[in-house]
Image (cartoon, rainbow, N blue to C red; front, side, top):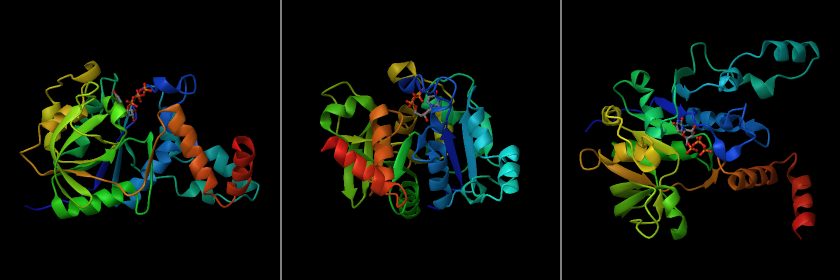
Length: 289
Ligand code: UTP
């Protein structure tokens, strides 16, 4: 089996972000900031550090701020330059001409459908999927750890993280096979299993390395849990045909699509910062006791 390198990454950013209203009424959820960087930038940096060469955004209406974030900001840069201010904080964000690639998901029909919208750009090669509302903190980063594991076993590699048993109905869940270090064979997958019916407490976080055949399965546009076209259901159909592993990340996951996770991410990353950490720590101690 030849293991093709992972060069492309798909970022589905066409969701409505209803859990974060009113913040996300006119602003994309992926532009919410953790300390001083929007979520999308953390995810793009993670992908680039992991060796990704082509960034593909699946966007929808009202997501223009995402495109602007990775472009030149002419007025801002000209004014800052004229005032002698350093541009270092924004210089690296701008991508190469022609990148990122943007495709549209006209209607939010589900994560599987969003990924399928990138099929022409992905073509016939394996690819990564990153959900930017999940902020992953670790060294090496989550996708880099997954790419290293993929380079050993090939096929499909998805995240596999333990959650409390009472929370399994909120996630895609892995039915695990043999375990070898951080890798677990995937025997089956189920999206949002009914309470008490989950095959394990291993959830699928928002990081995936997938073979291109998943696009042909998604062509059928079958709907699953919540009436949405689910990526989990399409991935499940690859099990047994291709190697399929779960990877347990050595690091921390913050679900920033959820208010609690978002606040926790801000607190955790602020406490770690040399510039603002001491002040935030002193405030938090005084407030919480
Ligand atoms: P979520 O389940 O968080 O949905 O999607 P959402 O619509 O963004 O947010 P809520 O639940 O209404 O608050 C997970 C990821 O999949 C993308 C989202 O943008 C997010 O990155 N997504 C989801 C799409 O791009 N299209 C879809 O049809 C659904």
